[in-house]
Image (tube, rainbow, N blue to C red; front, top):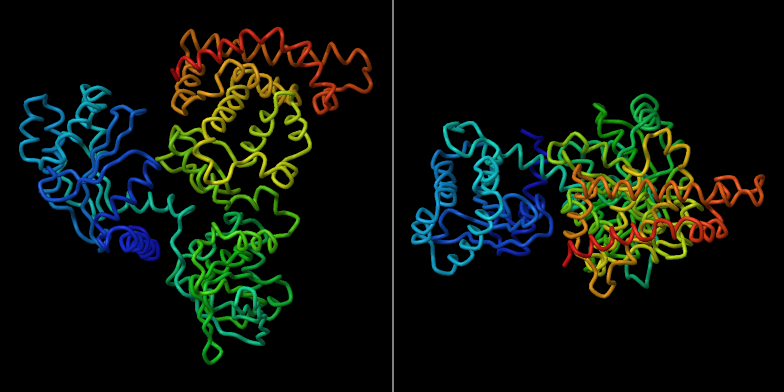
Length: 578
């Protein structure tokens, strides 16, 4: 069983959702949360009520086999403390049998179901039988019992098997992943205040404070609260390393020097209440100083004279916007994280559109690492086996390189990632309200960049040799493929995914597509070799591929030779979306 801190946070998450959307009914909020955490933004229906046939939710998954997930849930606030009853296992087996054993068994099952659910269950049955349900090894994946009970009473003699049952430990593992981007608000933080200096902001009708705080107050807070919850809105995860070790050593062995050697903490909160030099921070979030808190959270020393300069910025208790949507707060986060080691993309990792992109990529089984250090925390999770992977920086480069048909986007990429995420971020990434609409184009750029990287080069050695031409090759392939796609009709994400899955397969279509990628790469590299004759000292591979003249030569020397084959790939994409 996971730690009490994680369990407490998980229950807070479900309780908050229940109060906001389900009139306090945590059972329903649990199902709602699970569907979002496990599947992202999908079509699903809540069926839990009288005469529901033992089904609490139907999730449609047309891209999977089978194309539906049938959920039964058993929720208890006593997470992991009690065993699931044998009747719950038997109930799930009855539901599975109704779907498995043909039309007669299913029709009999429907007679026990209330009338308003029968059409929905029929649709689910059709999705089941038409997408792999006839093969029981595949079909049983459609049935899922989720519960916060423990698994100690698993009978082990049913037809579904353990993979269809997700118990408290499984649920908490899922929550550990989910919480990274959707952590519930932190509990109130109480810290002693010394040498306070107030700052009154009449425009916001709020007062913020600068004072000395006891480091041990934060350390004791972590006895009952998880550090990740307090720093959830920081721009990076714990990067560990030598600096963290030095911080902990200073706290434990040289506490009097801690104040001199530390830049301080910055905390944003919704309200600040102080009495007898003890301040209570409501909905606190540490936006600068996360490495310090990770370091001291692991220390066994709970009492220490160490002090730390602390700035508390009060949003105001009547603030309605979530911090992720508050541009003022995002500006503060950017402003207080100004160390040289912080990169431009770090400042963008908590932008609302990046949270939405992470969800949409996850629906396509791609791990989108929007924060540096994120993949390291999740790469061993069984749930991410088989996932592709991309990072915020690489996605930004792909979108930039493919943004202009004349290749000027490639020249921006050649200027460095910092430029993309500083000056051109708003031009490259849509705002959150437009992300879903623009996602097919974003996903297409990702798949083309991945396809070139994986299949256009015969070896890693060859890629290293020709790496200066990589983004130029991505741009040229994107130009040729997209020219054959009707921009007015566009393409669905599913069509793009299915087409590129075939391009990467061992089938004949895949062999041909990979041949086109290799030919494009060769022609791009050959364009440099031919053009450089004009001035061999000036036009090395570095200068050529970051110069507008190089783009012009690629368009004249390489593009005509591969255009027809690239357009053929684009037509296959368009056909997949027809």
